[in-house]
Image 1 (cartoon, rainbow, N blue to C red):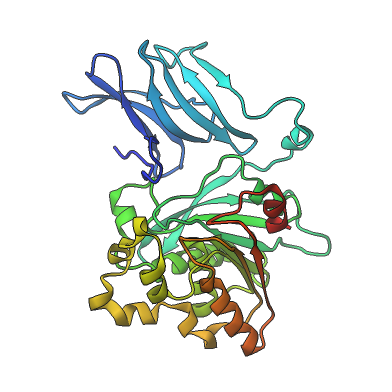
Image 2 (image 1 turned 60 degrees about the vertical axis):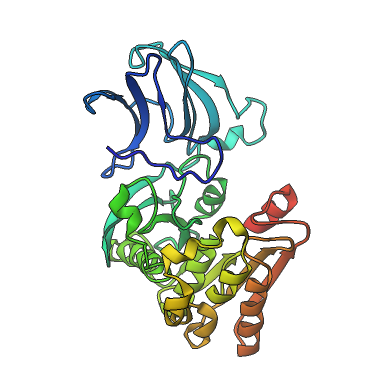
Length: 362
């Protein structure tokens, strides 16, 4: 049994003990379908005694058990933002489920459009290290004058996190305009078991971008998307994957790096303390793997860039400092490629001001 969810944030957990301490409940994901369930585990025998699959949500986090045995969690779907749900014993009977607090109010201006939101399809496809998982959003119809929709590949951050299927307005923005979007849980993503997550050990800057390339190629081969109109974007580690795709692959025709990494060696010495040794496992200690760092730095492979690139960056980012975007932007501009850079003043690692989030999408 696998309990997905990487502990990036304090207090967030994917399991908890039931009253009495003899049973535990855990959030699990079906590795074939991507469906999230709650499994009830006997701690003495290790056996699963019950599985609850009707959680009224596509994505679930923050599982906690109350003293009366009720289970509360944050659940969201493609057409509903993360809300606080509750399950009362016996958990799988009619009437056991309730929503304690909904994040979407009937008066919210977006409500009339929610019915048109596209539900993602969980897909798998072959990658260089084995089967890869992703969430695919196909538009009802392509843009005018096109037979097939263009494709936006999205690479999540982390890199050992995973994509969410809950209330993805950034995805629905593109789908509503006729684009297909594939959100790739590349090798190393959590939620698919230890072996899948540990694929990325020593392989960051290799397997992640190759899996994103494989996702695009798979959808082209299936006839879902236009192979001549493929773009990629991602933030943080996803921005790094984006730049690797532009440097090492000829599949992509445009890319957007949001506070992404251009120079791994510079980041190794400049990032914040919490993740200062993260790359020791993802690539290897720099003292013994300097050549690998050099080989996987997009800034060292400018000859591979041949398409437009956009850089979005917060001015006060301490995780991936602004110079990471600046050095790549300057290099591509000097090379004569179409490129642009937007620096959001006062923003850190990720954009939180409404006006900047809107500008980011547009």
